Image 1 (cartoon, rainbow, N blue to C red):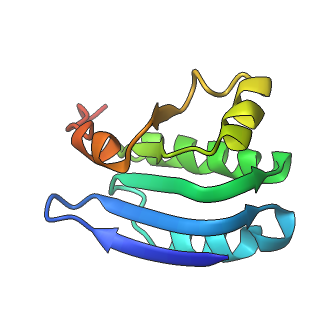
Image 2 (cartoon, helix red, strand yellow; image 1 turned 180 degrees about the horizontal axis):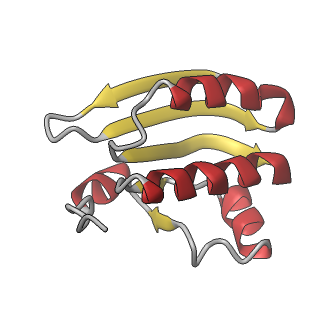
Amino acid sequence: MALSLIKTTDGVNIVRFQGKLVAASLDELKEFLENLPLSEPVVLNMKQVNIIDSISVGYLVTRYRAARKNGAQFKLANLHVSVQKMLSMADLHRWFDIHEKEEDAVASIVELPQA
């Protein structure tokens, strides 16, 4: 799995990766994301991810919840059709904040009120 990070001038972490997001490659993504502060917004650009398994979906849910708990936003962008189907089957397409384009996801980042 190839991973890259871009940090916008607004402090949004854009993570781009390609390959299969499955249990065998999940540790690499975990290590990469866990080096980012939970308090900073993250956009996952999944344009080059065409396979995702349930273990990886579970990790994305965990990371999403941790980000929200810390007042940050966690968004998905450029989902491949097969990834969209997987999230729909798990009824998570309504739960995640999903955008067709990376730019739209970044533009949608807003300051969340502190709890």
